[in-house]
Picture 1 (cartoon, rainbow, N blue to C red):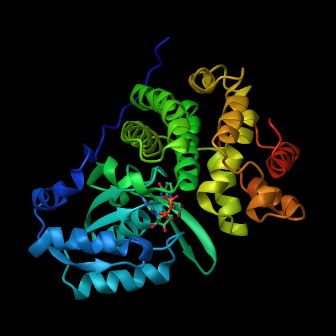
Picture 2: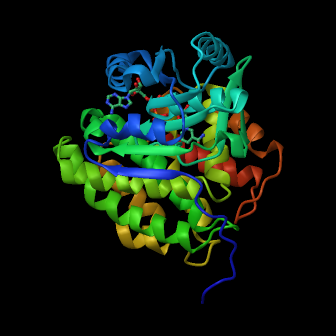
Amino acid sequence: MTRPFTFPGLATRVVFGHGTLAQVPEEVARLGHSRALVLSTPQQEAQAQALAAALGARAAGVFAGATMHTPVEVTDTAVAAYAAMRADCVVSLGGGSTTGLGKAIATRTGADQVVVPTTYAGSEMTDILGETAGGEKTTRRDASIRPEVVVYDVDLTLTLPVGLTVTSALNAIAHAMEGFYAPDRHPITEALSRDAMTAFARALPVLVKNPTDAAARADALYAAWGCSTTLGHVTMALHHKLAHVLGGSFGLPHAETHAVLLPHTTAYNEGAVDGLLTPIRDSFGHGTAAKGLWHFAKACAAPLRLADLGLTEADLDRATDIATRNPYANPRPVTRDGIRHLLQNAYDGECP
Ligand code: NAD
């Protein structure tokens, strides 16, 4: 039965293809800008410099200091560079960390953003920004955070290491998983997420064996776009809350933490959502969405145990306390016992 829904519209222009990096100067000009600050991590600085060279007179400079969790001190330095270079927009080339810095600059200065994602983390289509100050990570949503243009260039993902390929794809799948049962879901996110599950299920096993398979890279990046669009248009629940707690309060790595939690958060909610996770079950097999995702992660050599990410068994009680302190909407009620049990399973890495 088709449910009533409200569709907010898609606010971000998307260019998708091979070699589309060459279109960035044209996209900057299309926005009416002439002095782009190109952002990257130190690891991707050479690519950022090459892009600045391609932008020519439309480049104001490069800031290659983006880092995980968007610390406000880095943002302050980048905003000062943005002003000193008299930049009028940002071009973020990289994964979620670089996109996060671009968003942080945009929400402070009003800068337009062109994002060139090179992982599957899925932050580019969203109005969500997580920032760290004084060791604490806070997340907020605001229209000023959403990028104006996203340029997906499949060729840039050919160098993505296999490990990050798998974990950032599972991070993307987590957006779709929670999107399937989000109270504000609508046919666009449902259709994109369904398609993304099929594409990831097909592409990842190929990429684990051959990371430069161009067709599989295109499928995976297309799937990441669908998952990111879902994250950017609906409300997330338990899975994202737990990932935030483990990343923010225990310093666990972002993509790996999402990857380990995913089968267990899926198992927690699957029985309470009346078949809404069927597209995941159908894409990954093994009888339930949770089991399918666990076997898929294992087959792709993803990390399976929180114990392997640096969490200790003694942390589980405190993580449970933090995760259950403030109430939030979730299909199945969030109880202390339920979350403690979930975290123990994720710590041990058993199939849910
Ligand atoms: P990342 O951006 O931290 O990248 C990890 C490393 O891989 C970096 O050194 C980067 O330079 C390198 N790298 C990226 N692409 C590469 C490529 N194609 N080839 C070679 N190296 C490459 O990792 P991530 O998982 O993309 O992003 C994680 C961050 O994104 C977290 O801080 C998380 O909070 C944020 N995030 C935000 C949202 C949102 O909507 N706000 C959504 C998802 C993730």
